[in-house]
Image (cartoon, rainbow over all chains, first blue to last red; front, side, top):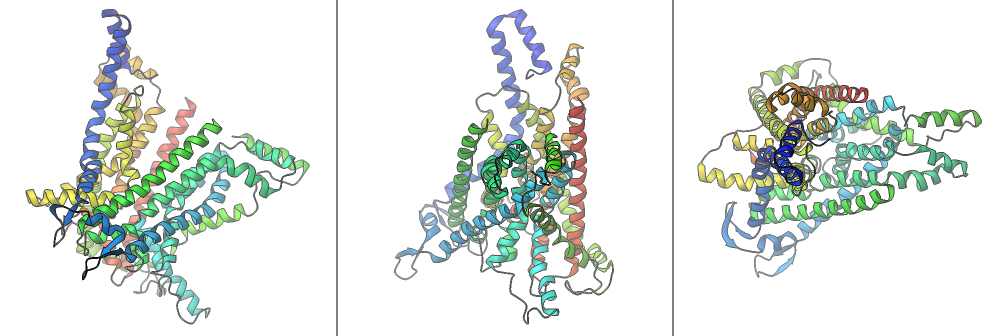
Length: 322
Length: 284
């Protein structure tokens, strides 16, 4: 199966000339060389514009900040220290930087909350799709993926228009006299969470669906035959079997939520920043590149922890299901 | 999988009880589907508003579409966006096709996992981190060479488009029958001829899907573009991000609706391309 036409031709040629294992080795070597050669152009671009810059950023996080942005080539641990600490401008003592800790905590908290609400909506939806007739499932899935592929900025903008003080929801509420004053929803943590849930929901549905599609519903029926209630079947049969999908979905929502930039910027405003906005700020008005680099790497480490957790738990549950 | 429904029917005569339902799940799913689409409705509806308001309906008109069309700034950024998306998506698709051909037809070897990891890296690293890293790199290149052109944006977009182009092409290659290629080689076709006349036509739907995905992804990008662009290099999304801070008119809705329509059209085409692929594969 793996041998391409060309390779099998080479293989037969090699066998007549040299015979035995060495011919196979040459063919194998050529196969590997061809594989690497074909991948190289893509890898070069990715190295120049994705992996390489991360290494440079790691170096920058240990340099001193320049006065107007940029850096000065002098070693300093200030960038890393200011991730959670701040230096008093008068007596140079270090203390915990409340602002940064608040933003870090808000990022983690809102991302977890978003993951949870996505699960609450996404799990029943995935179940619903998985229990449709097979030929209908693709259509339902398609309905889930359409919003996912449409512009994130536009979807966030749609939420913003809904919940603005002069937006659709508040206009409706005030004109029918439910409330006197419009409810301030925009520029709150709540708005950011709603927006992120809306934007990342498809990322939760798709993997849960993928694991439920393979779910053997005879097990569900067996559960009912043994007088289990609906809730018990859900808790003891469906959820455990869909667990790999639930974990994958949670990771897929949590990671982009943690690094979100556009959604908190539009819906949270300047006062409800998340980590991504704090990073962006260091390269704009903040003009503290080493700090920005250190914050970026902090974010990257948090993402890697989440991914490692995923790989470990995926390995575990993969083993038990075969 | 078809037996789910049979089970359901079998259960029916004995008791009016479906093993497939869970209390409240259908309702939750219905709410979920409504919530996914509801926020987009006012967005599109008010783009046709005759008045300036985004909350009061003052009659139907194409006023804001005309305004956007005649807005030189909007035209300028739209053309830049399309140019960037076409260039980046094309390059990314070519590179991704080569990489997919290289990585699918080989037994695993040491380093193959690293190649996968590198190709998928843009999917795993948060966009803002990549954006900042690129800003740092490009700032020093800009300072050293004094070049401020589009090349920075093109290479940045190409890089994050590669995995999106790569995935459908790889999926297509993996489902492909290799006997046809072997047959071509048996008939003394050269490698290049085999590729051009056998492999390429078979992979083509995957390549097309990859190209369109890459195009949509590039067209939608905000974060990386925002941080990498030089002065006067706004794309449509970054221009809109700037507009959102000022007082918004339905003109933004009109632009959004058009962009929305483009994305939906693209994704629908990809959906049908894939469906054809799957059908053909099941027939085989």
